[in-house]
Image (cartoon, rainbow, N blue to C red; front, side, top):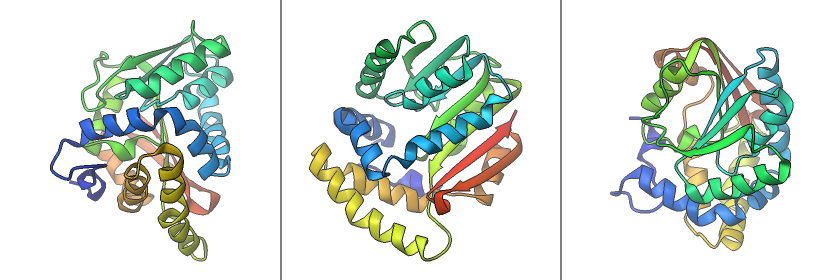
Length: 244
């Protein structure tokens, strides 16, 4: 069991999956505003870089796991022009906002949303050309199982693209990020979302989550090959790419 799997938003004895669903339903109305504000809009550049890394593979069917409010799915649909993109998430509250955004962007013919437990996806084996996840796998109750499911639904030769928040490994950014994530981030999260647990949980899981070379081993164990990673913005975010 990885350390971040032991961290839960509310009750340490409750089911993590249910608590994560409750947490995201609670913060859904303010999620986009907080994401962009707390990252100084740098998160938009991270998504752009990740999708550019997929572009050469020209995936026509894409599954966006832990899709949330659909920012990554919408950008991928615009840039990659797939035939079909499914956004999957455990939180209906988040996806309801995503559906509104998709309608506004005129992308309803391409993007659909489906409530899914990422530990047990309902899709058939070898369904998608690409599977993506932006800032979501850190919340999996079982990281190995979730990644194995993502691998299962990928077609042979298909590509995985993940971006995740990580701890910088070098000073002074390591120290600055620690100060920011323990003061500004939870304070603003509490003020804007009215949820005093969510953004403290965020910080705790970032610090506990395996990253870099450790994630390469975890991805390979889940069935992926050609695993690579790239640290962005001094290591605050990491891009992971892999092939089935």
